[in-house]
Length: 428
Image 1 (cartoon, rainbow, N blue to C red):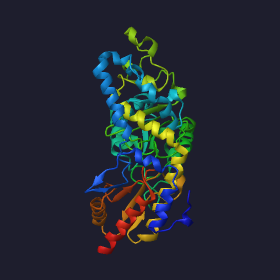
Image 2 (image 1 turned 90 degrees about the vertical axis):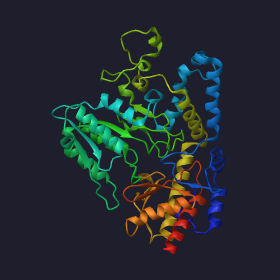
Image 3 (image 1 turned 45 degrees about the horizontal axis):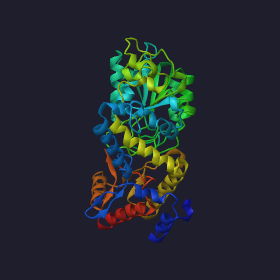
Image 4 (image 1 turned 90 degrees about the horizontal axis):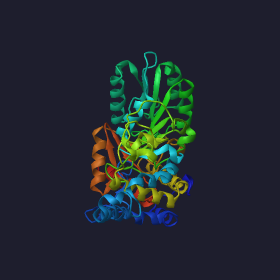
């Protein structure tokens, strides 16, 4: 991939870089939205990934099985519904760096977070606290606060919030580890993101888990903005659990079925859990007995039978990732994001500042941008980009997020974005 000192601002360079991209053909596998007859430059895969063209047929196939086989579709057809969640297991494990027994596709992220906190947030009078970041995604904040209250504790004292300690609003590794060391004896659960949604900062999961475990804490991660975006080695990170959604970088559709990881050491555990029929061991599930015997591994946290029409898009998307190869995708992601960062500094440094860390190891493909000047300028630029067929997203109070996603974004998309910002600046 091209390094920063060889980037150029001209259109010819961007076109040549795209022509040389070994992953260029994957773009054609996605439906590209249009705006007034013009193809959109889409930088919002960190909110909702684009539709893989093969997804429609995969869903239609399951509808056809439903029409033709009815209830027998659970046992017949190419992919019987009874085992359908197992057909995504290996690819899901590969993309998060886990063993197949450690992952399951189920529910939504917030539901999975609650279910796993039932097992892994076990507060005591001496150790009631949860460590989160100050600007946690609202759903995480709501969930951990609800769990704290459910157990009879006061969030005012049992939630420990990490304040950003760096000028761009990010957290230094030292600040995270210092908070764990300082509050460790009171912390029951460390609950942090893999990639912070507002700043795009990637955290060092293994180091955090190691320090937290040394203090006797359980460790969970929200990977909503990390899965399909950065290299994850969940098994080796040694965290106790993780949760994620599949509608962002995993391109599985609005409200897509989510995922969960439970480390192999908890495959058989007497920790409490909310039990459901589909979490019962597979070999005796249909004996319909009254005693719950959990399936070993992450499957044991399932409640209900799998949502087939929601799993089909995930199965297709994971197959795309496997064909592309995540190592190649990550290299392209770093090249695109590096190019976008370089262009911003070269062309519109007087307009934009970047909150996301510069080091590739500390970010994924998202760049979080702030407009210099009056706060209302940020919203004005966002609306200008939308009207110019460039889709980014806006996060209060003042952040524009742009994510050049390697499966379908190009260098030319990055150039379109920056040139549009330059035109907006020149018209002000």
